[in-house]
Length: 173
Image: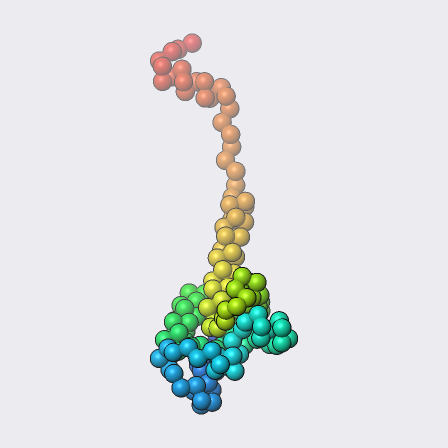
């Protein structure tokens, strides 16, 4: 278990999500409740094949995670992140949270570009689900290690097995 003083990254990431959305509002993004304006999403860092690969704007592989379409989109991502922090904050070091979040965000962005080259991606869902996936993988790994460390039961000999059969059938020698 990790102490509370190592949880600074959870709070910082939460602040970055909200702060980036507030910057978008201050910078002229005017549809808080859900209208998608592709030009504004491109301006703020959404990812697409054209923008990332063709124009060599590789910074979009990370920036798209902080761009949200609406206050509702942001709220859902914040709730998912808050649930992750609530359940797993003591099990993941700050630097590891950042590494997993950034790496899974980049991986999701690359897969999105490959699978949907004419679409645009934005939001933190990919990185947040990557955090959940990491914890699930670590949980499975720990479970497998625990199973391997359990003491093995002694195998019963064949004579005991035969004696039990004889007793059940009431055959005495």
